Amino acid sequence: EVQLVESGGVVVHPGGSLRLSCAASEFIVDAYTMHWVRQPPGKGLEWVSLISWDGGTTYYADSVKGRFTISKDIDKNSLYLQLNSLRTEDTALYYCTKTNYYFKDQGAFDIWGQGTMVTVSS
Amino acid sequence: QSALTQPASVSGSPGQSITISCTGTSSDVGDNNDVSWYQHHPGKAPTLMISDVSNRPSGVSNRFSGSKSGNTASLTISGLQAEDEADYYCSSYTSSSTYVFGTGTKVIVL
Image (cartoon, rainbow over all chains, first blue to last red; front, side, top):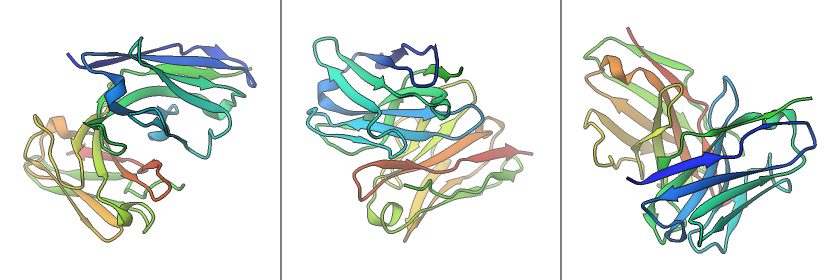
């Protein structure tokens, strides 16, 4: 079964850092553009970042640019999100998701993980 | 990048049809056909319902359909059923090579 499983969500103080991981099963992350999407408690979905299928291009939402870094490890077939300089407004459930077309930069998000919760609080 | 605008809620009785609008700009919805719709039940992962404005993925009921005119995309649910009650989000690729979601719409089945 094609699956994504996120991990790494914790409670962290403002200004802190952490790394989220997303393990992929039954497909190769090297063939698909991958994304991170988050949902703050009681609020809507917010797109966070993408890494192109070939790993050559990354993009970020303005709200996280300069603080978050997306990456992937082909050998571990996993996606990552490094979160630095965390703010209380970064508190959210973080989902990883893949696009529906292989070897393409664009596409809809057809497979989602269950999410991992990041809480930024003093 | 501002969120796409959706109505906060839409309601209908079982069997009726409802339409959810998603209004963006000429830099996102009006700029390309990479517009998609997601159903989200609380506590579960979102589910892709429509891709590329109007394509329905395998396994999605044909009661769901999508369209676009100018800067506004729409999702129509026909033959409304109790299990359709959920939050729905649109998403669009943007001219900045990023993505943006809509504000979300709660569908209420009366």
